[in-house]
View (cartoon, helix red, strand yellow):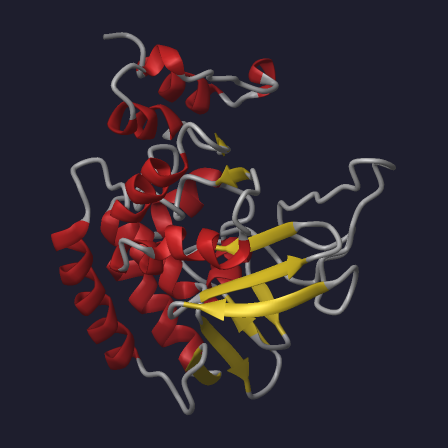
Length: 279
């Protein structure tokens, strides 16, 4: 879900697309290097290039939970018969609706995801002071999730602990006093009542679908379709990959698990990761 569509080397986001021959960064902005834009489901955006045979999907956990065919339909849309593909799949907020590291449950992940689609358009620049955090200045339109990241920039713990209904509704109410709040793809204003109603609707519907590990049914379907013929990598900055593996295959020893820069991990990440293997 951390895919930013500016697509430049200096852009934010975590996509580091490289040319396999030269090693140079490949811009994936619309109109560059053959990249075109598509939209699927309710919230998912895709950039794809026939030149580079690359398909970049800003997956959405709400879409992934709602439609069991979600990932499979995307693969079928862009893969030609006979092609072999490599899939790099994120875990948290892509196929799993909770996050062990961030301490997010279904409700927390849902709030975090919804805040990606809610935008504040301020009437004028203003300073936001919230819950004792350092004030931030807001001068232009911003997604509420971006505002949360800026407010809690000095503390990973504060960011992880932010995703509660109490804090989210208070922040929504605070910023709404300074401009218009909108929902992506919907005309007109988006009120707190609208947000709370949509949250409850998703919470109930997703609660019926999600399994005990918070894994989207669409993940199991696409894995079943692709296993044995294509390469699938679960790539995560969290520690929930093993949970997905245990729920997906009968023997985890058949899956290679690799940690990168393990010595540089924060202590809480190391503890969470090692704790999975204690039993």
